[in-house]
Image (cartoon, rainbow, N blue to C red):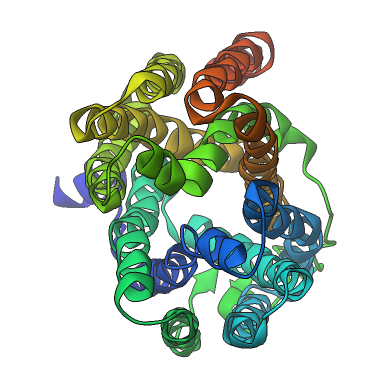
Length: 405
């Protein structure tokens, strides 16, 4: 009986999984200390609201640009070397921000920063999807996502505290040190993957043939499109929350990010388990509606209570949408195409965040922050349309195939 039960519930918390979760936490913390603070730095050296939007937009667009190529390398050359190279690029660019005294220099370095981020997160997500047992993939990706959520509860508040009490130079150093720690831990990740020692760079699949890398995974498009539209509003959350709070007379908006992260910390694995048990469709639609409701509340928020309520609802919604869609992406592909699948999905999310930051930055300059957040609800509604028009039929098709086996 115990062996049967073990087969039904395989272990998630293996040593390689714990290490990749820790790497993910450190890298996201490194990124999050800069996310709300680099736009402030840009404005301090003469940048406008549009430039502040570009700080996020160029970062994510660079990540989008490099993800297909990194996904191809992951499938053809192995996971570990690609991940370490990405972290190294990320570290160099983070340190170099110290000497970015002109706006154009800051924007150029932010592009390099985004390239390193795109390679790193595509690789780490692929490693996690290799390690997590298929029967617990939704739950496992939820736990993996928790590491970035915990980073979100620490990073933005830490970054804001550093620039308020110390200096931007210390901020860039702290960001680089988190990434250095991630690199050192990443060196110890080795595991028997789907094609041998993926951590060692093996590219052989069953039968001894080598995996041919691809830049784009077509089967990942339906869930990736939903993620793209769901992520557009997030660009406005991470880029303009501080200036919006200042406009509303709220001096310290740090609790918004902390509450958001704490709720997300619990909602991710819970939603992942529920999706494994009841099916993705039953949770995706409510999750998207929670995001839309949060944006409407944020549009009219005039006190910390309103901001925190929006943070709770948005985190519940995003906590359902992201782990479910990331698990679906993996379920649609054969194991040796996971690198390309993760790259396609992450590119869609990055493009949504980056394009959202640029679009919403332009709206805020012309119509103000309040209307900017209100208009973001359109993005959530478009995510619903894509789900019903494209993803839901794909899920029905997959279910039918499973029943006919």
